[in-house]
Image (tube, rainbow, N blue to C red; front, side, top):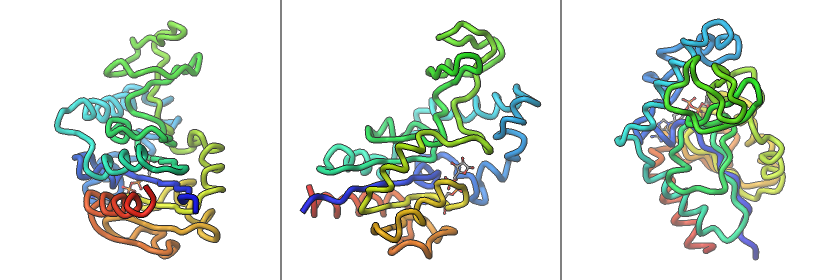
Length: 236
Ligand code: APR
C-alpha cells in the first residue's frame, strides 16, 4: 500500500516556542498593532515608513541567534527528508524557521519576511536588512521601490493553485499551531475532510477543531515530534 499523501498546514503557534509571538494570543502581535495600520496595502500607501518599520523590526528578530527552529520545525524537516510519499508543508508563517530547519517541500502562502518585492518589476530578492526609501531593487535598480514580500490582508495568498492541487489529492491533512481565523487557510480542512483524514495539533482548540477527525492539544514541540515518530515508524 502506498504511503498517504500528506498536506501539513502550520501557523504562528509552531514558532511560539522559538520565541516568536503569535498574532491572536493575549501577548500576540495584534494586541500591540492594528492590522489596518501595518498589514494592508492601504496602510503601506498611507504611511510607508510605519509599515516598513513594523516589518523591519520583525525581520531583525529573525537575525537574533536566540530565535532558532524548535523541535517541531525539526521534526517536520525530518518528515520531509524521510517521507517516502508525497508531502507538502504549507505555512502561513513569514518567518524562516521551517527553511532553516531544512524543510524543502515547503510553500510560504503569506510570503517571507526575509525577502523583498519590487513594486516596479515585481522581482523578489533577499531583503537587504532594513527596507527604507533608499533601498534599491537589485533586478531593475529602481530606488525606493521595495516592499516586504509579505501578503497583506486583502491580497491574494501565494501559490494557491499548487496548494489546491495538493489538497485535492491528499489522504491526510494536518493543521499545526493555527487559530483557523484567516481564510483561505482556515477553509482547507473543509475542502478535504470528506475524503481525507484530518488531524489538528494545537495548544488549545481552534475555531475549526470540531471539523477535524482528531484534535490533540498541547505544545507543538511535544505533539509534532510524536506525530512524526509515529508516521515514520509506520511508513518509512
Ligand atoms: N504550540 C502549539 N500551538 C500553539 C502554541 C504552541 N506552543 N502557542 C500558541 N499556539 C496556537 C494558539 O492556540 C493559536 O490557536 O497557535 C495559534 C496561533 O493563532 P494565531 O495567532 O491566529 O496565528 P495564525 O493562525 O498563524 O494566524 C493566521 O493571520 O494575522 C494573520 O497573516 C497572519 O499568518 C497569519 C494568519
